[in-house]
Length: 178
Image 1 (cartoon, helix red, strand yellow):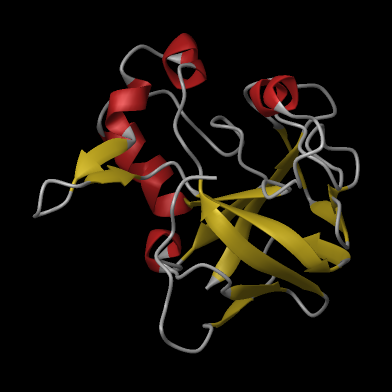
Image 2 (cartoon, rainbow, N blue to C red):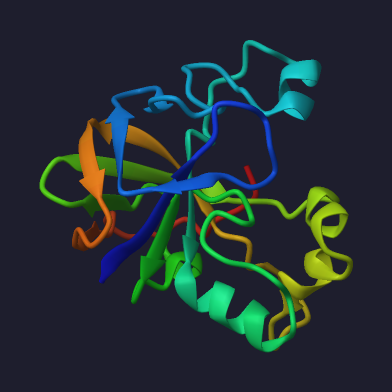
């Protein structure tokens, strides 16, 4: 399990620029990223209530999704769908809420929930929203656009750093959109 790409953007752009390392700030998010802060920074949520806690400080996506989208004909790459951390070998969507994700030797993230795919995906490429939504065997909606987390321990993460997980004790709480 490892970090394959890192991205940030100081504006509220849909896609983020890739970089070799990121500085994670405890309780805030990623230095220089538009979503960094104690309170919510996503524009639609700020409009609803700017005092909400920021449960979406860091966006993680599994690289396997990017590969799947490319095979389906979408022009996507690292940072394209707005993620900060692109992982390899981690089944992000199956993690329970409150899982601790260690990136490298310093940074610890706490999983808060699922990213809810939005119309910005289709604004980027037609059909992309539908491509990151699915149904499980019981017909329940599956959101595949990654997970959200908050920074519990800050530090520097570099491309290629290892990833380790600490699953919370049972009973596990399934991820919901945040």
